[in-house]
Amino acid sequence: MFQVNELEQKLNEENSKRFALEVQVNKMRYELQEKFHLERELANLQTHMEKEFVSRHELETLRCSYEAALSHAKKEAEMMARDTLNKKIYHINSFIDKQPA
Image (tube, rainbow, N blue to C red; front, side, top):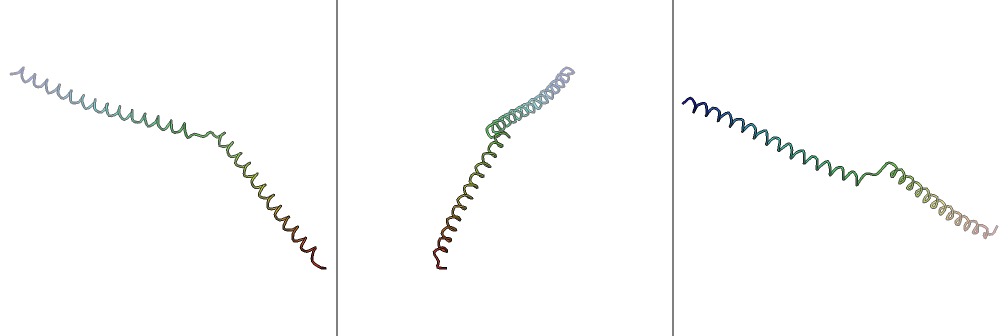
């Protein structure tokens, strides 16, 4: 009878240990899955950053090109406005010159 009780106690202890180990294994499995998920997400973010990244030098070059094009367009617009005004002044002066004194 003593051996049966002792064996039952050992069995209960072993079952408790097994249950604790199963809980620990499940926890570790979940943590591992979470780690893999985070590693995939990190890899995706790194890939996205590599594709979308623009260096400071590229931005500066683009800004300089934009400013140069804007300056050129501004000069052309000013020249066209000046030419238009000069033509109008010429026509007005011609009209005035044709008027009797």
